[in-house]
Structures are given as C-alpha cells and as structure tokens.
Length: 141
Image (cartoon, rainbow, N blue to C red):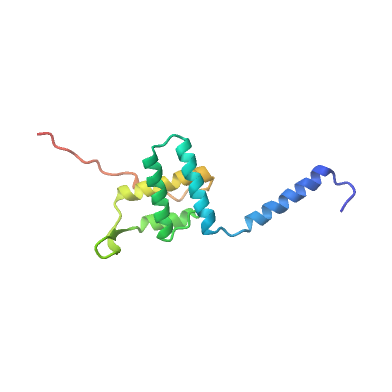
C-alpha cells in the first residue's frame, strides 16, 4: 500500500469492499420474509389499523406466491396485471381476472412496500392505472 494513505482512506477502502459484496449477494426467501416483517412493524408504528396492515402483508405474500419478485417492480406489475381469481370449489385459478379494486389494493400495497424499502419504481410502471373505479350509484327510494 502507498505510504500516503491516511487512516480515513483505509477505512473508506474497507467500506467500498463491503458494499460490493452486499450488492452481489443473492436474496433468499428468508430475506424477503424479513423485509415483510420489517414492513409490517413500520406500518404498525405509523399507526395504521392492524387489519389494514395484515391485508397489505397478505396481498404481498399472495403476489409472491403467484410468482412476483417483490424486489422487481416490473415482475410485480405483470403479476397484478394478469391476476386471476381463485376458484375455491375446484381449488385452482379461474379464467376470471381480478377486479379493478383488487388490483388497485395490491398495487397500493406494493407501492407502499417500495417506498418504505426505497425500491425505485420506473416511471413507465403505472401502478395507479387500476385506481380509477366506477362509482356505484345507490338508489334512494
């Protein structure tokens, strides 16, 4: 090593090496589960209703089960866009797509998850496209 390196320079070199190793690491299912637990804890600390928090966690777990990589917004977008309803009688996915409301709930849960974990969502990924639902008109008699 060069004689002119200060103690700070040596520490900086060590930090850069650690960052490279972390960046090249593979993420396991246990890591994702840990992220979901952390997300759940932060949502509770923010004062969200526990039922809302549980619904968001369940939706994120369902997206994972259906093949979405929660660290890849494009993967999640594709899974939400092509989501099909579950047939409880025959215990398999049906041909009927999720309602716009269900897709919107899943998308909002995922966007919240991304904000908390600082996952960058590309601008062309329009997760709010399912948010425009027609209003139900209730008749007053």
